[in-house]
Structure formats: C-alpha cells, structure tokens
Image (cartoon, one colour):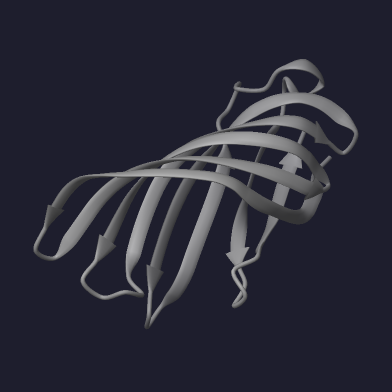
Length: 132
C-alpha cells in the first residue's frame, strides 16, 4: 500500500568546498546535516555535488543522503538520491528517490520518491510517496 509523508526540514550544517572555478560555472561539493520534522522524524547526513553558473538563478546538484529516524512510526535508516536543477525561466525541480534496498530496521523494504520545495523565505518542505 502506498503511503505519503510530508513535513519540513532544517539545515543544521553546511560545509562547502569549491573544487573547480572557471568561466561559465563553478563546481563545488558540500557536506550537509539536516533535522526532519513531520512524517519523517530524524536527522540526516548528505554529500552533494553542485554547479552554480554565471546566472545567479541557474544551478544544479546531485547527491546522496542517509536518513536516520522514523517514517510513519517505523524506525531505521535509508539513503535518498537527489537530483535538482534551478532555472529562472523554468523554475526549480528538486527530486529525490529512495535507493532500493538501502533501508535498515523497520524500514528495510522501503521504496519511494518525492520532492523538496524551497519556499520564498528559504524554508524547506518535503513530500515522499513510499511503500514498505
């Protein structure tokens, strides 16, 4: 049975390092820590690779995030795969998918995908459609 999770998260830590800066785009990586509230309750550790361009509103990132906590009252961990782009004309697209067979504990068989929305004030909300 498909279930739905919604809530918010805060970014607790952001450690970014540029590794390639040239005309047109800058490449960087970041270690990010978060705290989730709502239907996902817990913390995570993320590693992302980013590309920012000469146009401030255009960028992209990919990454992996290990979530540790509860989903719908079930405790365990799993890994999320991120893929995101931002474009002044097309807007933002921030998608994530649970890496198959990455779950532990009561989340061992979790599968799913969802999205992240960054509001105008910089706050983050998420939605996740999943099965266990």
